Length: 136
Image 1 (spheres, rainbow, N blue to C red):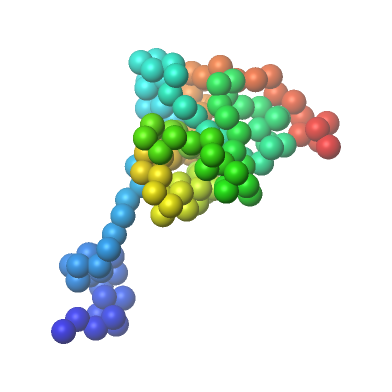
Image 2: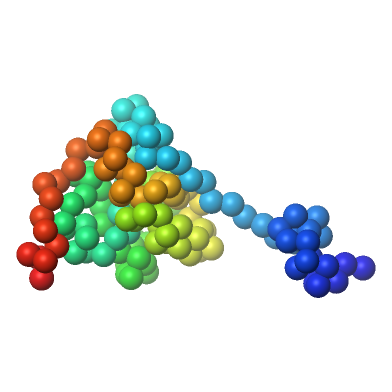
């Protein structure tokens, strides 16, 4: 008999060994996303930052679906097509993907490092930067 305490003490490996349910989220780097976009310019990119962050600067072809309005975002996504999700640094995109994965969206791919990493690659066409304070 495996006790919950034994699983907790053994961490994730003990959880898996006990046959408990696990799931994973696919993540790619901004560099990988850039390479993918070279092969498939129609790849869907969704930016889950707040509207004001998106308005300040974003990938030109990206769609904005703020995490705050995740239920509205569901209607923008096709469950059968891969969608690349990013935020500013990676935290919100992981939450977004996790919530929607639990709702049956299995083709969402997190972009590690978010917009910061995307911008650092210098491989994406971005909108001109607008100071966020001017958007208030």
